[in-house]
Image (cartoon, rainbow, N blue to C red):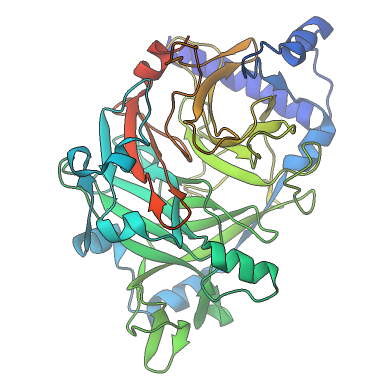
Length: 462
């Protein structure tokens, strides 16, 4: 049944791709009316509305730009060769705390309904520092169906330097050197009772591979698929791609980033990951405030139940605003010469093959998954409320309606974690992973990495 559902989904995707390219699609007026008019009250966003016009295609299209192989090879050679995922995990210098060792503010960030079955908190230094925010998650369960990289189970968490003072300085025309820096926590999760991690700084090759500079990204979403990591970017670039076979080690410990006297430095980080490519929106600059313009990427996830496997995206969305958010997907390449990259044509063009609009605002994470025996995907949308003191909501949406757990006597939908970010589904274990994190007035609080069985999410829906 699962395979039959996947083939049906593939045929539907082919038809929708044709529509997004400008070919007419026979949607009945009644179905469209139902999809766009279901305002069910109590904050319920109702049904997803299919987006099928050719203008939508133009706003979601991507242009792939890969870094020359010689450039990557030069930087790798000059920095002593690839350290690899195993190398960075072997040198892990941070330990995560199990749920029982988390403090009250951290445990308060966990979901009310359904409850987390696994939860971890960062080491004491990372749990309190204001300047860095954890914002995205992906796992070796995304990378490969056997859920391992070599003999390890691995979780990657994306952190961005988002200091409030840095933001103020930037608005004043005085950007700080660390503003927007992006790093990845490589977490060895092989032993579920003793998670350890180490950071790598994201960089971009320069001067033909003789140098590198810092990557500036919010890391609102990322997906590890096969041997590549695709993350959300900023400053005109939609997505950046990295190669997990290209983790390099610095040999100078200083605040500088790039080539320095005596070798290479990365602001004190021992490891760096150089970008091997990017994806730009073909429709031009994105707009974070206009839901009819080119969308800014907010979060990403992987769907292994589509055919082919696909990268799922949502646009950046403001909590409590009036603008609706779009969710869509891009197919991954099936070529053995393009492992982990999106399905680009001969000119490097990548087209979305499915797109919807949700009435949910403040969308912080998205996941698409077709259940066994199902014909159509179900979309899980994490919503951040306008009131920062309340828990979020995890909606399951289709083109016929939306459901979420209720957890209080007034039937509140605010049952999900506090300030949750991206979603990642570990297919082998059936777990939905996410993380929380925010900056309070004078410190960081509520930073937790946790997992909930997707079956528990479905079982809790009201």
